[in-house]
Image (cartoon, rainbow, N blue to C red; front, side, top):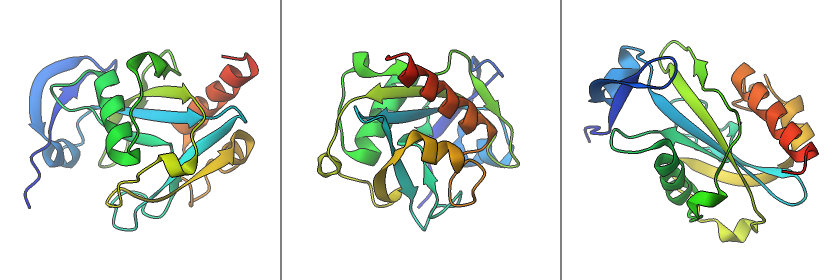
Amino acid sequence: MEEKELLEVVTEDGMPTGEILPRNEIHEKNLLHNEIVVFIINSKNQLLLQKRSANKKSSPNCWGSSCAGHVDVSETLEEAALRELSEELGIRIEKEELKILVNKKLVLREKKDSNVRTWYYIKKDFDLSDFMIQKEELSEIRWFSLDEVISNVGNPLFTFKQDGLEALLEMKRVIENGN
């Protein structure tokens, strides 16, 4: 099956350049594109993490953020976040529940998937039974203490790297400030 997902090439501040290409071409040419990442945190200050499916090209069987994904060419960042939450976790939230986590875009330069990440969070209590996970994308979800996640940055069983650490530390500040 041929991949038809279209993405827009962006500048380092996440602004569209007007160049629209298929996702696989953007990855092959290692062009910057927008991605969103969402953390779900409950009233016990636990983060919901997803275990990526074994068939994923990138970081299979590794624990990562609650939800993440590309921003399609016709979407705003918020629309992409809401869509990914629905697709991957089977939940719908109101746009107003989505809060920006990091006030700056984080540019992640890698060999095949350089992107500009915008980090969001939702503070809401969900029971694990509230979720309907997308089996193609993830195999499991679980609540983790924030300190446990932070202590696992760099662990090969977790997807978090330096940009993730910055976002996790910001999440810790948000919690400590009661937001």
